[in-house]
Length: 598
Image 1 (cartoon, helix red, strand yellow):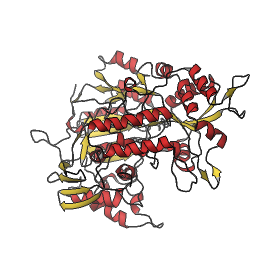
Image 2: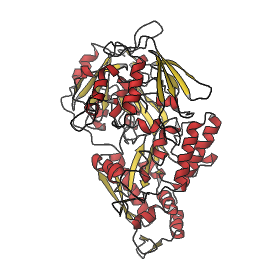
Image 3: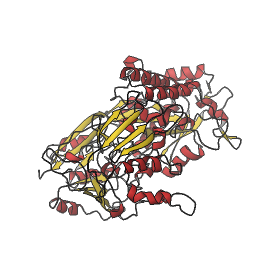
Image 4: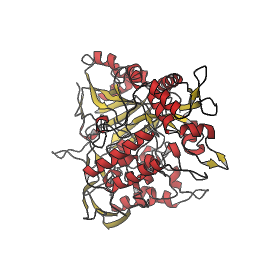
């Protein structure tokens, strides 16, 4: 499913598009106790990779995770997986079969699967994960939305056939279902029943499952039982996470040798991107993001430093500003000032703002030319993307057109070139972002400047992460925000953004306790099309359905899309077997990578 995403330039631990993230770069933690020489010495002892991450993991509990960086690309797998091209491949399940009506799928697990403690992994673990964890009303998680099928929002039902076979029974055909099983890329990973069952059935003093406090980051790593290629060996807060190869991981090469080949994987927690770059250049790290700020330097050093810069094309994910279109009330009081709400809910106003933002200058200044304008909620690298040549509406930088739209919608200008509404109110609002990101700060500053040219005063206000997320998901007390969402090949992974009741439908969020919420016709139509697209198995028809959702979203602009950086990473040449992907990053095939001396 789509997740809120950081604008991070730091490559995450395994190069995966990790479970996502927040609205901008969060403030990095201090680097303490990290002795680079220690890692160089260790490298001579066992094959290992050393990477940097920007902050500590927030939890070791896969079901409860909502942020990045997280450990789960290394530690937990689902029934299927996704390769670098976005194709679904077998993982814990060796095969699957659909019924003729597409409403029953039988998965067959691999023989002799085991958890990292040596215990068997069986169909009981699969059923436990879905029925006792994902579908449990007392356990909040982000997988529920993606597994709600059709207009009824019903969940699949599961039936154990035997220890290796599980049948999923769907309420209606659901084309994206296999992708919901392809963990850890925004899908359900299988967790151990023999370890976690008691935590689900036991309640704390508030009557909630003890599972909600299980596997926090203060847990002894030896108690974190996994099914992925690596297990957590140690965690030192603010310093590092060390992963050790899971001896019970199922993969073997053609000669029968166990995979992964690399024995140890180290997350080094760094202070900032400059520190990561310095440590990569000095030979401590094996990988670093090749961002717009460091690309020229890295390119000059590529040969001498014995590394390669990989370019995967435009990065997956969207970056945007969004206005609060919610007309609801809480306790009789409007969530948004009615005067500003009228502006925000005027389509011509949003279109004018889109025309007023100079995306190419943003690319030139912020990305140093290493990026592309963004015009769609669906990633350009997917087969579902609708190009401008095919009819996608785009908003080129055109302040004159922006003013024309505003005047046509009843706005006017005073003698100081300030934009006023028909009642004489100055058009002024607050643009929020997450504090601590130079990228978000630069984008916000330019947007403020661009809008001032058409008479709009945008007060740019970075907020602490917790304060910002509280406004977006709880109080709904916000006017406009600068944000980002993760991308995917499968459009339905954005269903939680586009369904009117989805948990990331932030521009008009449904929330318990609010009154008189209105859902616009275009908003309902996009939601209807997402349900229809999920039911359709014919690829040509699916493309046509999602093309229409892009036409509508670009006409009504609940999100005003901005720019997309190129996905680039510098990796040591001693790491062999890299198959770089903008979607899945550098180490999606970690199990087959090798490390050599040179």
